[in-house]
Every structure is written in structure tokens, then in C-alpha cells.
Image 1 (cartoon, rainbow, N blue to C red):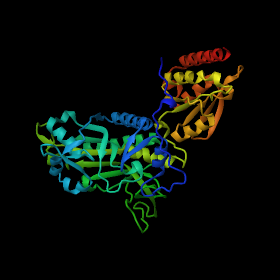
Image 2: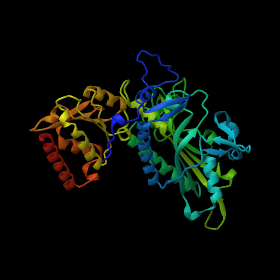
Image 3: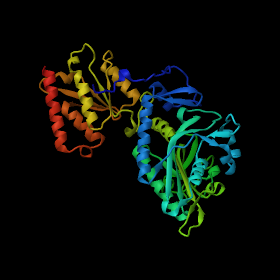
Image 4: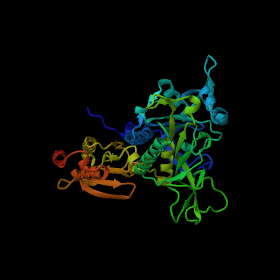
Length: 463
């Protein structure tokens, strides 16, 4: 028997926050309330969240998108231990500076470790231990997607500022500054592609290198009123996305360094950060490569972070309505929700169409879920679909029992539109909307499938 994803079997323990409850504005956000209400995440303790099945699907899609773009620039995926020996951070003189925000512990032998908020020391030590690299191997670009830890003084705003968070961190190893700068530009392009595919407008700004060190740094921000950062953008010449913009600007207006016009100040959330590190970590940890003259040289490094859980929270914050969760379409937990007729209704004999549509969408690579809770009205289930953030809904409703021209309702919940379509056209429209017919199967095969589907559907209704 073929498996069908059904809402009735979904582990989705929603925690309903009463409408008349007064939220603590310093610890909650719209995205937090929507994701808690919809059973996307669940708080386990202060600043700690469990990702539930729907949340994991969103996170998985984002990870797959990032994986694809990292592979395009030669990224090789690894997974480092979360525990890092504290002695490595001592060698790079970061331990004392970062100590207030680190989770630290000792093992039974008294050795000191920390839960890594970032992995520059760990990856550099790995390359040193397994090296030296040959100049013929360079550039080497290693990345991981994993949990990071920070002992936040005041965790708040849900996934915006939590103690555990998921990041993609890539570390590049080049021969010199020239090739390192080429890598930096290529990773900048990869970040542009990632963020454009997500579809939420972002700002790229030049930033201070801070504790990380290095020579060059850029931050990636989403503009949102809930953000705790401030960035400046020039309305006249757009001097923010590729060059210098003011960060943490307060008080007086900031003049654009390019056109001298006043810059617009925005609240924002940082969702990515890149650094051209140089030998900041390879020198104290002695990570080297062997050049063409058979001499050891220090590796020239860069690091590139993307906060995946923060991207998810920011996107929900920016795109959603107060009572309606909306995802970037490419990241929605399911692209399509199929709603069956209500139990006892005159449309109930057409219930089997839901699974038929489901399997045809599945064959086209379209992920769907069937809301089979037939004891609920279709209207109530449409409300629930909006709360979960499904972009498109197929309703097996009144038109499904017509013998002459059976139809289904196709709703685009994000655009607020719906159309009545013949059964075989529903699959065609969804395929074109989501990825185009040509991307998956030839027109001839597609026509054969949909014609067969229409014939079987008509016979089933007539039976």
C-alpha cells in the first residue's frame, strides 16, 4: 500500500496563545507566535526550541537549497564535533574575549571544552592535522550545516535570538590573498543566489571584522521593525547592497559616502556574515600548504556563515499576516494541501479523488499532504491550511460530483485567488506553477498520464 501524507496522522501539537493574552513584547514576535500556534516549533526551555515535523520539512528544504548552491562553488560538506577543545580558542586568543557567551564544560579527566558558536579553530586544526595540503588541491572549501551554541544573556524573540541555532558555515583555504579574494567574490555570488531563491528582499553591507579578525567583512540583513540591528541605505544611489553602509547608526542622519545624500536608517536582522580572514587562524594554529617550490606556506582563509533558523524566523516575520503563516514558496512544508469532502456530504463519494491527485502530484515531484479530517468542514480546514502556511490548496468540493464536467477548486492562499478546474487540469496547473512541465517529464508522457487520470476519474465517479 502506497503511503499518503495525511494531516490526521501529523504530529502537530499546536500551543494556542489566547487572543486576549498580552504578549511580552521583549520576548515574543509574530513569527514566534505563528510557529508555536501552528505546531512548527515548540519551546523546551528558555531560548531552546524543538523543531517539529512541519518545521523540519521547512528546515530540510532550506538546507537542500543551500547545499545545492554550496556545491556549485565547490563546497565539500563535512560535520565537525560540536565540542571544541578550549585550548584551540586559547591559541587564537579568542577564549577570553568570547567567554561570557560560551557554554563551557570539563570531561571526567578535567579537559576543558566548549559548545562551539563557530568553528574557525576546529576546521583549521582539522586541516593542520591532516595536512599539509598541496598547492594542487587549492582552493579547498569545506562547509557544514549544524547546531551552534551561544549563552545568550537574554534569549528572546523566538528563533531570532536563541541559545541553540542552526547555521551553514563554510571555510575556504587558498594559497594567497589574490585567490582568497576570488573565493570571497564567488561565495558572495552564491549567497546572492541563495537569498534570491528564498525571495525575501535583503541588504548586503560592509561590516567591521570584530572579534573574528581579517581584512574584509560583509553582513546580510533582512529589514524588519523587530530587528535589533540598524543599517543605512541610500535611497538615491542604492549604496548599500554592494558597498559601504552604516551599521549600528543612531541619532544623527548619515550621509552617503558616494552621493552625499541622506541615508535611510532601517531596523534589521543579520542573517549572514562573510569574512576574508587571511592568516588570522592559520598562523597561530600552523595550518599550511606546500607550494610549487616544495616550501610550506600559511593558508589564506575565509569564513562564510548563514543563519538558517534566523532566516526562517525572519521570512515568517516579514511575509506573514497576524493570523496567517506564510513561507517563502520554495520553503513551505508542503507545496500543496488536498482537502477531502466533509463526512456525510453529497460530495463524500468523490473522496477517493484526493489520493488519486496526491499520487499524480507525487509522480511529478510535487510534495503534498491530504487533509483527511472529514469530520471538519472544508471552510475550517482552509483556515487550518492558512495557519500552517500551505501556499496552494486543492478542494474536492461541490463540483467534484458532476458527471458532465467534474471540477475541483484550486486555491492560491498567498494570492487570495481560486479557480474551478477540470480534474486533469489541476495537476497540469500545479506542475506549471511549481516547476514547469519540461523540467520533469516530456509533454507526451505528461499528456498520457493526465488523459489516463481523467478517464479513471470519470469511471470512478460513474461507478
